[in-house]
Length: 352
Image (cartoon, rainbow, N blue to C red; front, side, top):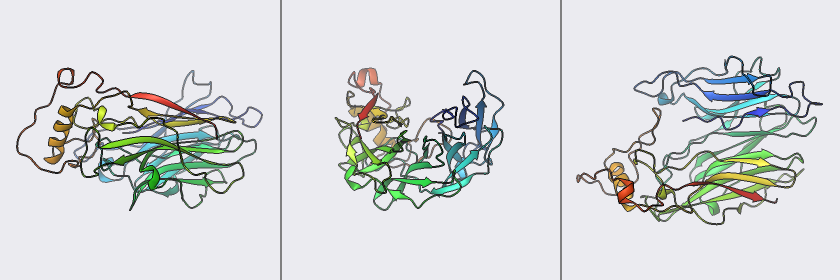
C-alpha cells in the first residue's frame, strides 16, 4: 500500500523562485512476485504550470522488494518558503527524505530522518490494515529552513506518535519526541502541518481494546487526538481528544470481507488560528456478527489476508480458538444491518 498524501506547491512568490510548481510522489509497483511486489522505487513528477501538465517522473530511491523488508512506501511531500521540496517515505527500518533545491530538476539521495518499527498489523483488538508511513510539513515563514516529520512507531507499550525537526533543510534531524501516551490508546495514522505563525499542529487516532487478543463488534473504540507545539515553544501540549463520538472499526470491512477496513487517509491542515484534522469515522455504522464470525474463522485458522493488495502481510492473528468448522462468507445485504460498512470522513475544527 502506498500513498501520495499531499501534492504541494511552493511558498510565497517573493521568497521562492519556483512558485506555482507542484510535486506528486508515489511508489511504482513494477512487478508482482512470490515474495512481494518486486521492484518498487519512489517516483516524483513535477509540474511547472500549477498542475496543468507534468514532466516525466524521476526515480528518487533505489528499487526494493517490499516482501523482503526492503520496500519503500508511504510518500509525503512538502515545500519550504524558499522553494526547497521534500519527499519523505518509509525505507526499511528508517524514515528518509529526499530533497530538491532546484525546482524538481534533481533530488538528493534519501537521507535518514529517524528510526521506525512498524506498528502491529493488525493492531491488537482490531483487524484492519495499518502502516507507519511518515508525514512531513515545512514552516512556511519567510526565511525559514525548518521542517518537521511525524509517524507512529511500535514501542513495548504499543503504537506511539513521534515527531522530529530539522532546521537545516532536512540534512540533520533532532532526536525523536514521543507526543502520544497510553491515555490515548494505541496510536496510528497521524496528520501534521505548520501554521503561518510557526505553530506546529499534530493529530492522530488512537485505539483502545476491551480484549487485545480478539476482535469484533464492540471490542475496540477509536478516537482522534490533537497536540501542538506553540510558537517558540519546546514542549508539546497535552493531547486533547477532538472526536466527539468514539468509532468502532468492526462496522466496516474490505470488499472481500476478510478484514475490517479503516481508511489510512488522515491529514491535517493548519491555519493561523485554526487547525483542521481530517480522518475516518464510523460513528454512524453498525457491526455485523456474521462478518465478525467469518473474519475470526479466517484468522484463527491462518486463512486471513491482510488487505486486497499484492504486497500485504498475512498475520493469521485475531481470534482465540482454532476451529475446523468451515464458516461461509456471508452476504452483507441479507446478513448484516443496513448501516454495516458505513464509514465517513470527519473534520475536527480545532482552536489551539
